[in-house]
Length: 188
Image (cartoon, rainbow, N blue to C red; front, side):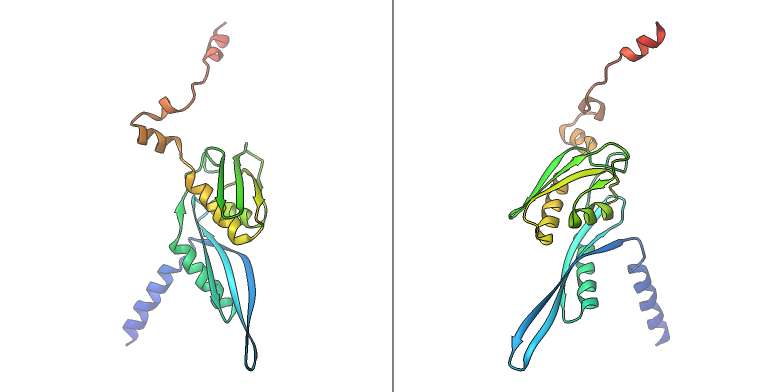
C-alpha cells in the first residue's frame, strides 16, 4: 500500500515541476438565482508559459476560486503553443491578430524597449519570454478576446528558418542582403 502511495507522489511531483510559470489574468464572479437565494460561482482566466517560447491560456469555472484557477491552469498547459523568438527576446516580424471584435497589433522592438502592452497581452508576453515588444489592442477590451487575438497573431509568426525550410532554400537566401562597403572603408 505504501509503495503505491509513493509512486503516486513521485508522479505528482514530476507533473507539477516548476518548469511553467502562470499568471492569473481575470477572475469573474457569476451568480445564479435559485429558490433559496443566490449561488455564486467563479470563472478564472490563466496564462501559462515556460518563458522560453511556449505559452498557453485556459479558463476554468468552479464554486471556489482556487479550484477555478487549478482547472484553468490545467487547460492552459494542455493548449500550449511554441513561438520562435528572435535572439530569445523579441518577435521575428510585425503581425496582427484577431478574435471576434478583439484586434491586436504586435511589433518587433529594439533591445531595451521592454514590454509595451496592455493588461492581458502583457501577461502573454511575459509568460512567453518576450523582453522587447510594442503592441496595441484595438477593439474589444474583453480579456478573453484580447488573449485569443494575441494567440491568433502569435500562431501566424514564422521564423526565417521555417520559411527557408518551407521554400527549400537556405536561411541566408531568405534574409535581406547587407551591403558590403564597410570592409572596403576599413581597407582604405
